Image (cartoon, rainbow, N blue to C red; front, top):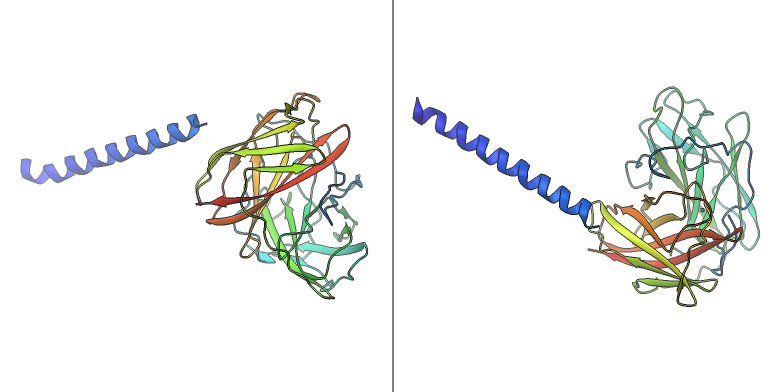
Length: 307
């Protein structure tokens, strides 16, 4: 009897020890711790508000804490939902309208979308060398066709990302990021990815990133905004938060949205902003931080190396 129960006791002890260790690691991790123009070429971010794509957000405990979309965003199909578009190429050097739709598992266009950070659809355009970033909030027609008004595009291959959450039928409440590629004809000169750095300059502001994210793990990260060496405390709310942070992987443009945790309190944001960083793979990521002051949107870009 005693001999037969000893393995069971030992397994229970090991399980309890494992649970305690996991809890300790979780506690240690917890304790370790918004549209306008930019100075970078091609970085227009959709300053055209749309009644059809905007709504008053519901207030939660934390701003911008939307559900993390599964997958890397590099497919046009997931769980029966599909990003469709007839546009396979767009002209270089001029503004263009990219039209697309999202169909559900039944093959019909989805027209009901939940509000995420004050918008029903977030649309991103990124060139294959991670230049020319654009973040746009498109408009939707009654038939479910969306139109994203893009700024001028440089020749090359571009990936168009649609980030959304269906609000009816199958998939309701599930966040998706789907994408398609578009070719822009012309001579494509590849721009080398800037070296990894903790700081970036934009419009006279200095953005500094603190934190050491590890691939596949959620990790706190802090962004500090200063100007002329002085901390900034007049950041204005943008998309229901003080800063919007998007990342793309160097090798394949894998998409990641880093979620803000700093609460909004009027036009008094800064200088420190907190994010939950969860980047799925190691290597270099290009980060685009958008923040607003004096009614103008600024976009800072820097390269972050993830171990």
